View 1 (cartoon, rainbow, N blue to C red):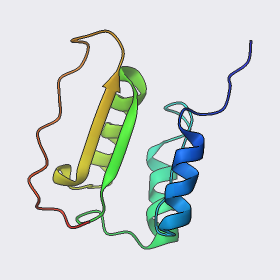
View 2 (view 1 turned 180 degrees about the horizontal axis):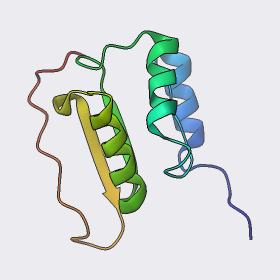
View 3 (view 1 turned 30 degrees about the horizontal axis):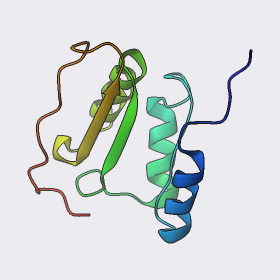
View 4 (view 1 turned 135 degrees about the vertical axis):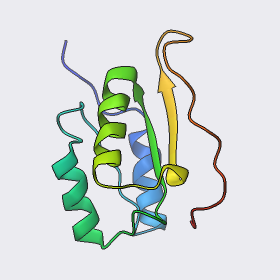
Length: 102
């Protein structure tokens, strides 16, 4: 069978409706690439030192997106990750320090 709609699609669309500066991207690690992140930053004039990124996905995709965020200089304090997959498959991210403004 084919892929269904992204998990929590309706919830993510509601968040975007409440906050027009919110965006959500879905897809595999090739869709959420360094270039797609650069394009999103430019389109919304985002500040990589102050804009929060909430990332959820399987380990290979999450690692690829984290690498892309690092490559464009995203502040690690502003990255929040929820891995899913086998227990113990990924190291947890450090806790948010509050150094990043919402």
